[in-house]
Image 1 (cartoon, rainbow, N blue to C red):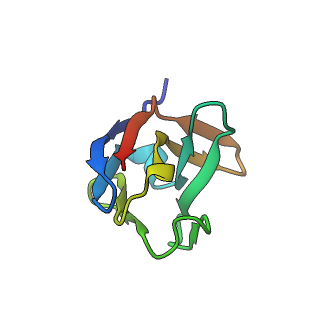
Image 2 (image 1 turned 135 degrees about the vertical axis):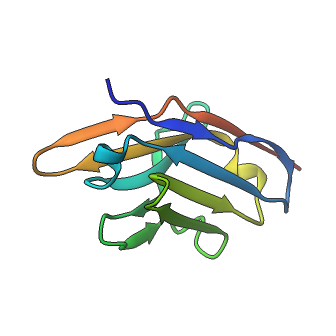
Length: 117
Protein backbone atom coordinates (compact mmCIF):
# COMPACT_ATOMS: atom_id res chain seq x y z
CA UNK A 1 0.00 0.00 0.00
CA UNK A 2 1.51 3.32 -1.11
CA UNK A 3 1.11 6.09 1.42
CA UNK A 4 1.20 9.78 0.66
CA UNK A 5 1.62 11.73 3.89
CA UNK A 6 0.30 15.28 3.97
CA UNK A 7 1.01 17.95 6.55
CA UNK A 8 0.58 21.68 7.02
CA UNK A 9 -3.16 22.26 7.10
CA UNK A 10 -4.81 24.42 9.72
CA UNK A 11 -6.85 27.52 10.43
CA UNK A 12 -5.78 30.93 9.13
CA UNK A 13 -7.38 34.33 8.69
CA UNK A 14 -8.19 35.67 5.24
CA UNK A 15 -5.08 37.13 3.65
CA UNK A 16 -2.81 34.72 5.49
CA UNK A 17 -0.57 31.92 4.27
CA UNK A 18 -0.17 28.18 4.73
CA UNK A 19 2.26 25.65 3.31
CA UNK A 20 1.17 22.09 2.58
CA UNK A 21 3.72 19.31 2.19
CA UNK A 22 3.20 15.82 0.80
CA UNK A 23 5.81 13.09 1.20
CA UNK A 24 5.80 10.10 -1.12
CA UNK A 25 7.92 6.94 -1.32
CA UNK A 26 10.88 7.82 -3.49
CA UNK A 27 10.26 5.12 -6.08
CA UNK A 28 6.74 6.48 -6.59
CA UNK A 29 7.71 10.14 -6.44
CA UNK A 30 10.35 10.10 -9.18
CA UNK A 31 8.00 8.37 -11.62
CA UNK A 32 4.83 10.34 -10.84
CA UNK A 33 3.13 13.52 -11.80
CA UNK A 34 2.18 15.14 -8.48
CA UNK A 35 -0.79 17.32 -7.70
CA UNK A 36 -2.96 18.92 -5.06
CA UNK A 37 -6.74 18.69 -5.17
CA UNK A 38 -9.36 20.04 -2.80
CA UNK A 39 -12.91 19.25 -1.85
CA UNK A 40 -15.25 21.60 -0.05
CA UNK A 41 -18.43 20.34 1.65
CA UNK A 42 -21.09 19.24 -0.86
CA UNK A 43 -18.76 19.99 -3.78
CA UNK A 44 -16.79 17.88 -6.25
CA UNK A 45 -13.09 17.33 -5.77
CA UNK A 46 -11.19 19.78 -7.98
CA UNK A 47 -7.64 20.23 -9.17
CA UNK A 48 -5.74 23.03 -7.41
CA UNK A 49 -2.27 22.63 -8.89
CA UNK A 50 -0.23 20.01 -10.68
CA UNK A 51 3.49 19.55 -11.33
CA UNK A 52 4.67 16.90 -13.74
CA UNK A 53 7.79 14.77 -13.63
CA UNK A 54 9.39 17.18 -16.10
CA UNK A 55 8.37 20.21 -14.09
CA UNK A 56 5.39 21.35 -16.18
CA UNK A 57 2.97 23.18 -13.89
CA UNK A 58 -0.76 23.82 -14.08
CA UNK A 59 -2.95 25.87 -11.74
CA UNK A 60 -6.67 26.26 -11.34
CA UNK A 61 -7.72 29.74 -12.43
CA UNK A 62 -9.02 30.45 -8.93
CA UNK A 63 -5.54 30.12 -7.37
CA UNK A 64 -3.28 31.56 -10.07
CA UNK A 65 -1.00 34.24 -8.66
CA UNK A 66 -1.69 33.15 -5.06
CA UNK A 67 -0.55 29.51 -4.83
CA UNK A 68 2.80 28.02 -5.82
CA UNK A 69 3.49 24.32 -6.32
CA UNK A 70 6.99 22.88 -6.28
CA UNK A 71 8.82 19.55 -6.09
CA UNK A 72 11.71 18.82 -3.75
CA UNK A 73 13.31 15.89 -5.51
CA UNK A 74 15.91 15.36 -2.80
CA UNK A 75 13.19 14.94 -0.16
CA UNK A 76 10.58 13.29 -2.43
CA UNK A 77 8.02 15.89 -1.44
CA UNK A 78 5.61 18.18 -3.24
CA UNK A 79 4.87 21.52 -1.65
CA UNK A 80 1.91 23.85 -2.06
CA UNK A 81 2.59 27.38 -0.82
CA UNK A 82 -0.73 29.17 -0.38
CA UNK A 83 -0.71 32.96 0.01
CA UNK A 84 -3.48 35.56 0.11
CA UNK A 85 -5.89 32.91 1.28
CA UNK A 86 -9.62 33.50 0.95
CA UNK A 87 -12.59 31.93 2.75
CA UNK A 88 -13.45 30.20 -0.56
CA UNK A 89 -10.17 28.26 -0.24
CA UNK A 90 -11.62 26.40 2.75
CA UNK A 91 -11.60 22.68 1.92
CA UNK A 92 -9.91 19.37 2.54
CA UNK A 93 -6.74 19.29 0.45
CA UNK A 94 -5.54 15.99 -1.00
CA UNK A 95 -2.16 15.05 -2.42
CA UNK A 96 -2.17 12.97 -5.61
CA UNK A 97 0.49 10.93 -7.37
CA UNK A 98 -0.21 9.40 -10.76
CA UNK A 99 1.31 8.04 -13.93
CA UNK A 100 -0.52 7.35 -17.19
CA UNK A 101 1.43 4.38 -18.55
CA UNK A 102 1.86 2.12 -16.70
CA UNK A 103 -1.15 3.50 -14.87
CA UNK A 104 -1.20 4.18 -11.18
CA UNK A 105 -2.84 6.75 -8.97
CA UNK A 106 -2.52 7.28 -5.23
CA UNK A 107 -4.16 9.70 -2.82
CA UNK A 108 -3.23 11.09 0.53
CA UNK A 109 -5.64 11.07 3.46
CA UNK A 110 -6.39 14.79 3.16
CA UNK A 111 -5.62 17.78 5.33
CA UNK A 112 -8.14 20.43 6.39
CA UNK A 113 -7.56 24.06 5.45
CA UNK A 114 -9.93 26.58 7.01
CA UNK A 115 -9.78 30.28 6.14
CA UNK A 116 -11.80 32.57 8.38
CA UNK A 117 -13.13 35.91 7.24
